[in-house]
Length: 171
Image 1 (cartoon, rainbow, N blue to C red):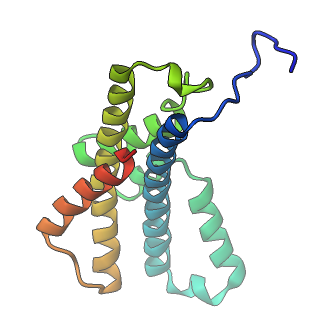
Image 2 (cartoon, rainbow, N blue to C red; image 1 turned 180 degrees about the vertical axis):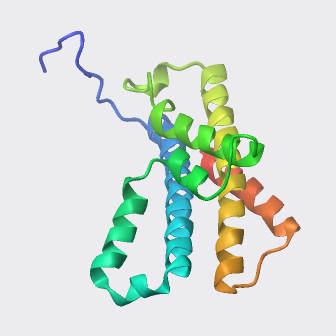
Image 3 (cartoon, one colour; image 1 turned 90 degrees about the vertical axis):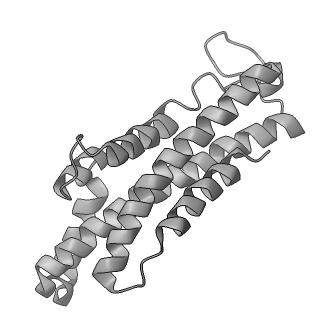
């Protein structure tokens, strides 16, 4: 393969690098789930505000399209969350870090990373995923209340965020 300095050129895969990319991928799943939950809550509130919207496929599609196009920060503001709400702000910032920053510099064989670098990356992604999970718990609890689904206990929420962290950081 011809190598040009600016292009990605290291396509080597190893068990170790695949494991680390798995950590990153699971973190991305958690981040994507949170954003989807926020969109679902926004859509649900839109339907509850105007129940006639479900009678018209065009209006329902418009509502869904609005939710899809809105950026996460705007969706959270529209739902009444502000930056003063530290859990939701932390969840949004963690989601953004996972989606936009976590893979920066990982476009080479990860076997070149030292053990402390690997541990640091895993710990950082675990921390971010747990912050996202806290926000996801809040949003899913609101969806549960609005849809009359039983709301999990605070103990469940604590176990959930720990389980998300464990799942993301497992190698």
